[in-house]
Amino acid sequence: MIGSDAVDYRQRFRAIATSYVRFAATDAALLDLMFSTKNGNASEGLRAASERLFTAFGDLIDRGTAAGELRPRDPHRLRLLFAAIMQGIAALVGTRRISAEDGDSLIDDAISLLVHDRGPGEVAPPIR
Image (tube, rainbow, N blue to C red; front, side, top):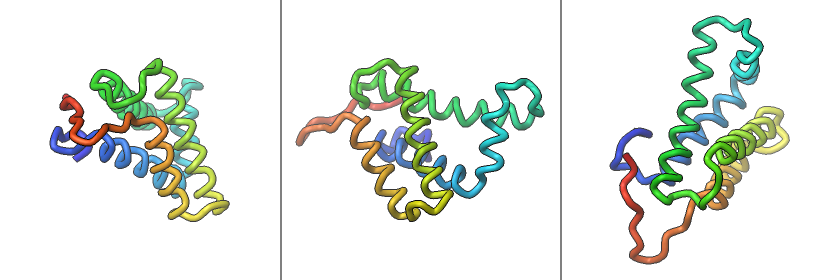
């Protein structure tokens, strides 16, 4: 569903963000391993999983930037910002400093800060 053109960008953004936060909060040890792949000693499977995760982030940001869905910024910095925000929310949820519901609200707040709001009747171009 995330890759479908029938789903609007904000829904895609939320689906990926929510999936990441839930994964990071429930499988923190695996996420730590995925981040450790930069050390060069990770297995091929772990390296591939890490690449899929960051490719999904990058694709989401690149498509949104190209389609005008995101406020104009450097796509590389947007990827880092998105990952940092989601990692922070996941850390707060995973350590039970905030509830999962509060984490969902923070995801919505982050999306509102990053995604361009459309005026009434203003239609976003399709994302391909």
